[in-house]
Image 1 (tube, one colour):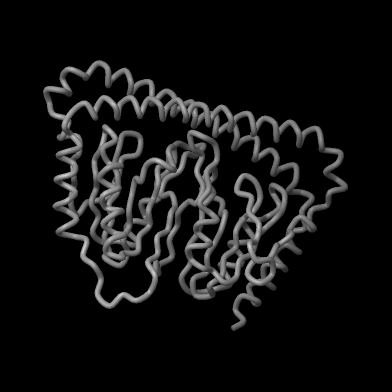
Image 2 (cartoon, rainbow, N blue to C red):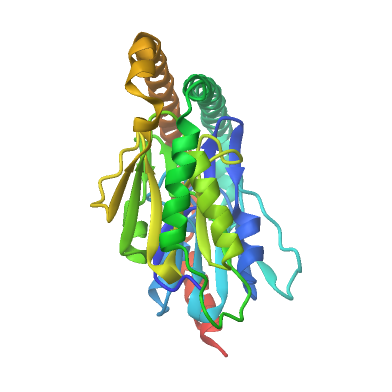
Length: 358
């Protein structure tokens, strides 16, 4: 099992809209007690989770908000087999087994709605601005992904994948050994290590160093790394190794960007333009060499144009996410004065004591 206190994302602002791994996460971990927060913006959901976490000890996993990483969207308390998640939009969730496993936490009852009626027009404006900004961001990310696919298709004209395949096979033989006497079920956790935010793309590299000592940094400018990571993923399946499969935030169904294997203290992370890995590697694997200098010389102008276009689209996406963040902040300001935070924290303290019970 993944035993240290770490951070990651379970949601992503992707090319097709908001993408979530929340349900897969809860199901894969078989968490016996799940609490689903329902409430409005600015009503203290993130603060509620932090307060509960402060009152408990042991191993924890923090789920950061994909659009605002300073906020929490969930916390897993490993020692208590318990999770709290923000179950409001865009990551709406409902308990599968009401009260037996999952319970609602209705923090909205501590919001004085009588004062919000007078602010309804402002609330509608902020909500509309935020929604429009997200839609524009999705379109930019979709266009950027199309450019990335064009770069990938150009690189596939070479024999590069053959070199990548040979290299990864050697690494698998050397590094991915099957654990002895492992009786429990294999744990595969899908998540995101990076996210598109109002401040650009953020990657939680600290999670890698927290879980793994040996880090292979896979340098990739031509999108060969998905093939590399797919081979690592299949080898982990065959050898019954637990892993965190960290998908691309722009293409959450098509690309695995990083794989962490805590029981071997081993990680494979992708370093690419726009999200360069700053970690000191155990081994550095340069996939770019497999396209060949001759091909690179013939395509240099085309690649320069495509990368410039990709950067412009990504920057526009980040600007729209910043606009969405500003609208959300204004929305929180409208709600915040009408929240009884004393009561919110009292419920958090009560829940903390409940979680501690055997």
